[in-house]
Structure formats: structure tokens, C-alpha cells
Image (cartoon, rainbow, N blue to C red):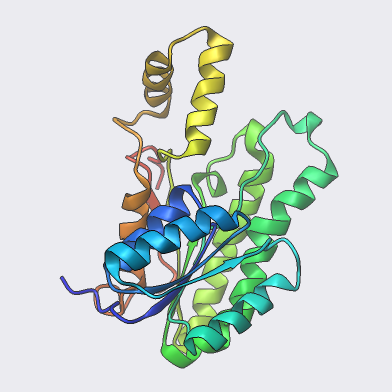
Length: 262
């Protein structure tokens, strides 16, 4: 199916690695030109070179820290100067600290909200006029913790719950403005972050990595881990005016069946 994304301009935050990198690749395969942002300029430039050389896409790199309040507006200014339009915004940047709640500080909570929540809010605000002009779409990469609470994930769960509510609120605004707003809750995805957690589990429990992976999958109740490109393919679907033109405010769990509540 032609998703109608060829020639569209997509901003992907947190694009230097993991899910963001996978999302950028899938959008490029569908014909999108890309604006890549994260803090790691070297990783972004490597991905940009790949997308230019293998897929022939136009790619703008904007290395920045979205926790800084002025950055989102400057990013959109750079996109408007470079492309003159924005059709798709993928808010993916953001990692939050996991730990015993009583070891977490106010600063830990503030840092968690600074990037993943307020970075998302500010970039949505800054990009909205351009998205409105194009009848565009936003896809927020959130997480299962937004509706499944865990004691060691109080920061991430709180941030994710806020983002899911924000997604629904902006989809309501989007009905009037012609902007579709969605969210994806990824499960356990094969990223460096997951590998780091498995390595820590292996060390703590005296297991080899294969056994740690097996036990973790059994605990989650899923057959395998997901892949970044699978999240990217879902982003392409939700962003498509052809395949998902009537969808607005959709929240999709892509987690191998881990979430089983209604």
C-alpha cells in the first residue's frame, strides 16, 4: 500500500539511537525527508549520511537538548528555513530514571518531566501552526507505564500517563485544526537501554545473558522482544493520511501482548 508519505517532512526527536533511529529509517523508506534531533551530533550525522546515501532522502540534523525551554522553537525555525513545512512530528525523546521511589529526588522527577513531557509539549506548540497548514500528524512515543503502574517506575509512569492525557487533549484540538494526534506505547524493544538492563540482571543474578533474556520474557509473558523498526512501521501507518486518515487520538500498545487489560 502507498501510504501517501512521499515528499513529506518529518521531525523525529531522540533519533540518534534505539526506537527513534528505527522510526527515522522507516519514514525515510516511505519517502519522507527527515529532520533528526537528539543530543548526540555524531550519531545523528551517521544516520543522516545513511539515509541520504542509501535512500536519497533530504535530511537536516539539529543536535540540541530539548530539556532547554528555548530549543523546540529554534528547532522549528530551522525546519521552516530548511524545508518550509512540517507534515509529521514524532515526539520520541526522553528517558526517565528507574529506582526505589524513596531513593528518587525532586531533581530526578524534574529531569524526567523536563525532556519527555515538557520537551514534547513545547515542540508540539511550536510545530502546530506548520502541522495545521499541512493537515499533518503527531505521533507520541510514550510507554506502557502510562497505564500500568510499577513501584520502581514512578517517574516514567507519571510522565507517560501525563503524555497519554496530553495526546488525547491535543487530538481534540486537532479535530478543529486538521491535525491528527496519536500515541504508541512500545513494550520491551531491542535497544541499548534494554540490553543494559539485561546485562545488569545477568550480573545481579549470576546468569548468562541468554538465561536472563529467557526469564525476562517469561516474566513479561511475551514470546520475544520487539524491534525498533516495528515501532517505526506503526508510526508510518498512523502518520499516513491514506491508511489512517480517519484515526485521531489513537493510542496503540505494541508490546507483544504484554498488556492484557481492557
